View 1: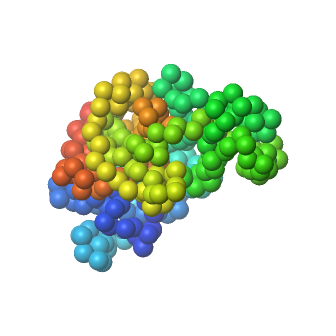
View 2: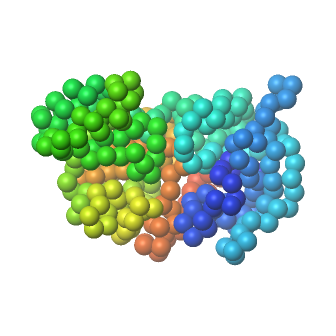
Length: 318
């Protein structure tokens, strides 16, 4: 296949941990033609969506990417496009999904641009109220205070447009600064936030990242927060430990699998704390390499093999 990876700049890639990198490497090992570009290199000329891209060869060496060719290419010439741009999820990201939409009936895109555009990673869990912690979406400080009073006095507040633990705050009903913190985060009542009951299990049992491919769980790890911290994100000092796919994980996937498939969200990462679904990560799910190292597997091979079958089925149906 001829595959395009829309992704962050090459200089930003950490090959020891980056999921996009191993997807590229595994695709190359299976004799596919690999191209890469940043989403800002997408363009449309005379009605045709195209990209200024580089054909590359990748390796695990320090200089991991060798450019073989540079060219402006119609998007319709690719068999598969991976949209793997990391957040921030901003207007430039939205614009990129609109350009990708122009070829979404001709080329398989993972994840589907409309699905990416419609699925907020924080808000999408609201479609599954039976699976999630007690949750409030509001811009009203008074509602947040009432939520804490009624739900044990502790909660986590999250901005709706960030990732990787950025902008998260722990709220305590007894904190004298509570109203000030919420006012700051809601921009004085003008910006909605997500408030979730604090799941104390995260301190000792961690936050599970479950990778899901076409609605089915394929691998997991648990992220344990460092001492004195409640955020378990790996890049914030969290430590990854092996995790199995348990019955609760499978039940969650059974419930949300049809939703993911309907929206073309083929490769996602679920965050689960104490058996509760807290986020659905769709933009550029990570942790493939960490799961590989902890469990002695190569998930990227399974993902690429799936993509080959999926592209063949997509081509046949279109």
